[in-house]
Length: 134
Length: 384
Image (cartoon, rainbow over all chains, first blue to last red; front, side):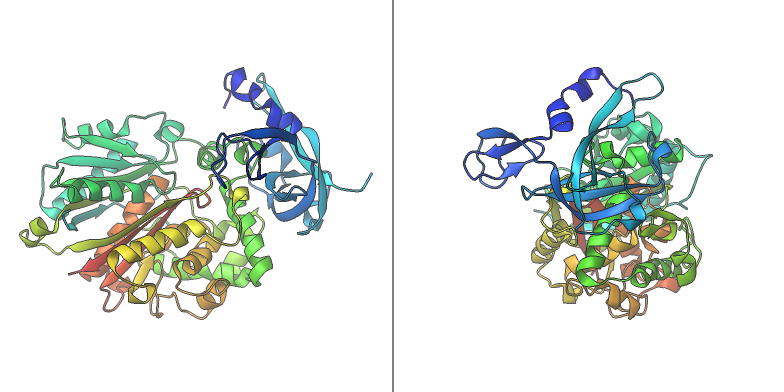
């Protein structure tokens, strides 16, 4: 569904730079940022960038896609346990999805995610690729 | 606080009902419910529906239903908790009666999902996830439950055959339910070779897209006793929420929200899970039924698959689950599901379930779930 530019523009820190919030009281990291820490109720945070590195905690291969993703099928979506200890969901690309395994090392890259119709905004964000240690 | 009884239930045939509108199906179920109770005027209406906006380009659904039900000026409220909207409607009606604000409180669950095509319906459902951090990345609901299934298989060794058996069992039950969308039996082989949707969830592991509605009428127990009709008493309610995004939970192989809601409902009813005779649970995907039975405490964590294979949850098992056919066979018009679960529980407790009747059914549990487990509402009902 096409929305006002601001709907996507304001997500830039998370989508483009994987900015997270680190609680100044208990050091828990939250992605996306929150206004109150669910662990300790703290309300002060420092902005940190996730390393982008982690391992696959669970994954699936989407074969029936929602509107806007039909051209990509089959594509893998996984939950990645980041090296910071938190979990992030994203597509796992540049791989044969059939060969993915839990525990695989992956690293984030900046990619095109979707487009709001033929003339709408092109939406960018993070996807993960196998970490080849390059 | 008033004790609350269900004095009327109504449900129509579910399916892909192109000839019927949102207002048609909601009013049909509500009228059947009012006729069942012998009541023609209510004090409040609660409509549980997930997304009239995305499915039908229609919001303001409380007033729409009240108007077309011939109940102008009755206070009407629409409640939403994704796929648990129906359960929330029953809970809201319960509070109307328990508090003394309403004597006759009608809860209607409804979803009219086939006014949009499959891609748009998949999108509408995906908005029950964390849109910016899940759906944005192309995940679907079969996909979210597939992520849980893969984690469950890894942690406990749950097999594809065990997952498939959930669908086989529920379709068998649904084949005995004239209201079911797909009242047909399926074989293990048919389930295990059906089209892959999101590995390892195949088409026959997934609940369908459905148009449907269900309704229940709640009254104070003292009023029910004077109405000369069979009734069931709501003795326990448990309602809980959890993180909107699946990835922020501690354990992807566990539905903590169900565990918490179940503990609350059982405590309120003064019961343990061993006191429950059967349950209607939210089998939106086969893995969900396995994880829900574990969270309810029917079996230990990891034992849901083997217990399903061993027939524990079959119609003639020690703990029947989804005698109605569940979401899988009966259909899953998302906002209607939670109400329909309560309808089935009441029909069973009244002893009116015909060929799918559970023997000596006195105490029932219904479990309705929103999203990937970000909300759950549980009711405990007893025959009196």
